[in-house]
Amino acid sequence: RRQAQEKGITLAGNAIDDVLTVALFPQIGLKFLENRNNPAAFEPLPQAEAAQPVAKAEKPAASGIYTVEVEGKAFVVKVSDGGDISQLTAAAPAASSAPATAPAGAGTPVTAPLAGNIWKVIATEGQTVAEGDVLLILEAMKMETEIRAAQAGTVRGIAVKSGD
Figure 1 (tube, rainbow, N blue to C red):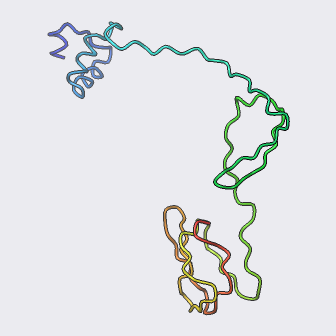
Figure 2 (cartoon, one colour; figure 1 turned 30 degrees about the vertical axis):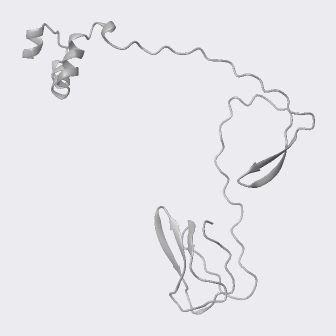
Figure 3 (tube, one colour; figure 1 turned 135 degrees about the horizontal axis):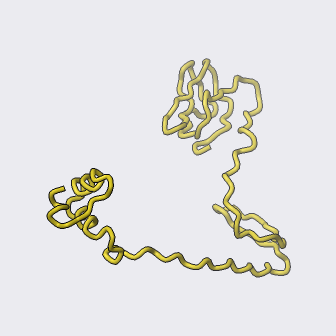
């Protein structure tokens, strides 16, 4: 308050806000209060750019059939005339439609107690395991969970791989 009186600065209706501003930011806070009513002392406001209309896409080639490669896999895509797509947003990735199927044959399938990603498969097909042996490691919510054999036996098949 003393500095404001010495420099002829008018404090706001709630003076404690201005005092706190200077206490927290001594150099720039005082400069702000000195120039509060002088917009020329501050950076000019950014000017909004005029919105440019979205150009209409040209029609695809006569056949409209293309081969598109995504992550090393080729897909044949047919493009047909459609409406304006300038306002579309990306959709969430689709979840897997069906869980991995268990290998054929008699045996007891091993299921995970929670959903997650397969971090590491430890067991191998044909391996003999004892009750409690770690078969694979599952990662869910940044935590690793060991999936163990519920009983002794032989691994007849593995329906998952690392990264699933």
